Image (cartoon, rainbow, N blue to C red):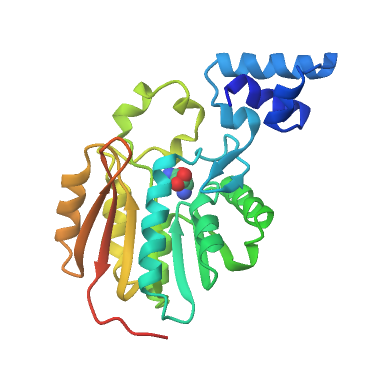
Length: 272
Ligand code: GLN
């Protein structure tokens, strides 16, 4: 379906096939709404914000400028996390932590496709969290997810002191180097800066997460992260400086770029 038809189905609240069967007749109000949508799109605003909707792994999410628009590459991260989760399935209830949840896409997809899990979803932005909560409820998984408003590294430090333990920690952290932010395509500039800004070299959150996450992951559990273009060597270097991790493994995206890293925390896997 092209963008025009997507706008029309949203306005007419009809199915794509209805547009083919009969050329759409718009009321004046609907026509005005369609023109407003087209003007927003021409100004560079992403279609998903205009339609307030996005599909992520078959999960329908409401999105608006409070949150990053989930990307298809992030589905690879979730697929890998689900694969790892299955290797740990003998455990009674898998505990999963999603850092920087944004729209809640990762947490919600994990909860939906892993029936025996409980997910903690963290985000620094209360406005993003309120949308993530709403998305979780709309997808019927709110009872499996608890939301926490906190900076992710502060959360990790506090949770380690409280001796919290997870089977899998997953994150798509902000990873754009700050000096590149002004040069991003116009569409990306509609998205929240805080969801993109990875500090001077784009690696700030990786350092913070990798340094702390191993204390919170049960022996044999996993840390999975989405990574930015060209960051693979730097990420590898950060991981190998912590002897707690092993089995470092990278997965490429559809364009052949290393996009996801998975590391296992050493130690013997225990059930229960
Ligand atoms: N977890 C969300 C996503 O993967 C948001 C990530 C972010 O804000 N950096 O799309």
